Length: 125
Image (cartoon, rainbow, N blue to C red; front, top):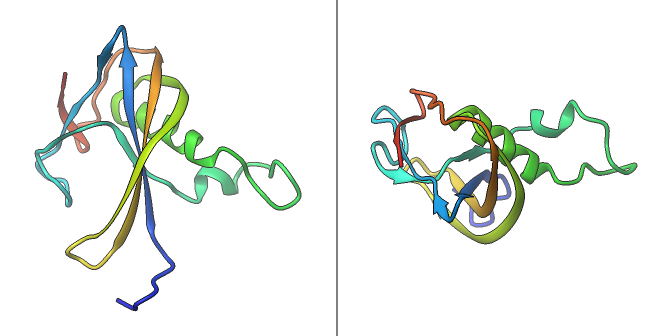
């Protein structure tokens, strides 16, 4: 890997709050990274999260991270969230050499029943 790598995988995670409780999920044992570990729902930013949408200004799309996180939580655990707020971020370079930026947020539960996507998560609490 070069000394100044520009291309990063961007990952969003959500600490989902409902009635003062937090949703955590157990990753599928078949996941490439962190198999079988407990975490919060989330996933990667994809270019489809904005390329198919009209730009908010002449040059930019806004709130792409928030929309990506809402999509990922809906796909992964089947619920709707809102009021996404930044908590912290971390960066790492995985064993395969891929650099990742993880942006962790807190969000309010809005609606839906937990329905796990088995290839992503196998349990929740």
